[in-house]
Amino acid sequence: MSPRPGDADGPPLAVGVAIGAHGVHGALRVLLHDPDSEALQPGRTVVLHRDGETVGRLELEAVAPVPGKPGRRRVSAAGLHDRDAAEALRGCELLVSRDQLPPLDEDEYYLADAIGLPVQRERNGVTQALGEISGLTSNGAQDLYEVRWRGPDGRARTWLLPVLPQTIVEMGPTRVLVELPLGMLPEGLEGEEEPG
Image (cartoon, rainbow, N blue to C red; front, side, top):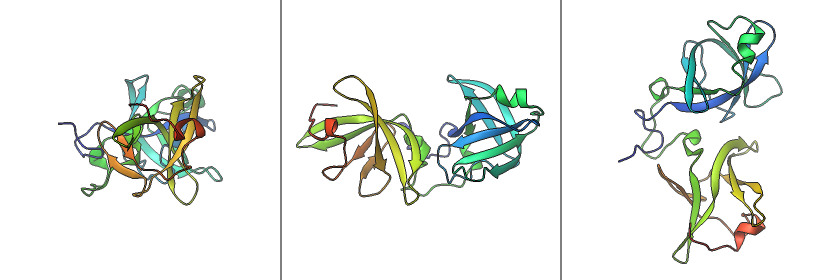
């Protein structure tokens, strides 16, 4: 059986992505998947992934918020001493071992675990595909999943799914099942009832 999202023995948790260098002394700018995450802490080791492969590890020395930029952190790490070294990590995903994070209760999961999962709803006995979770954001009052889907014209589009118990019926290792009020979906999805 697959581990449930958030299991301590599951794969490392993707907590953010390197978006460039900060200054000339090797600090790294990181965009967190969850703007309120405290997963990056001095003394922790993060694994760097690019295109699904491990490209290195960093021992974090200092982590600070970037003023005026919610969800962004300035990170200093052992071995990063100049701008070029930090800039070379642009696009790398930062992963943290789950055993470095607080344990979860039975009904809890890490929000980032849902990234990449399909979103579905069931209506009248039919399962409808609503897209795939591509990211996490916030409107200041609540967390929101960014859900990508392809419209009838083939163009990729995004809609926002509130991360609330009223909207997320089931969070599993293979899908996110939702129940949404009328009008929450984009027009191209609201009336569809195709098998997913």
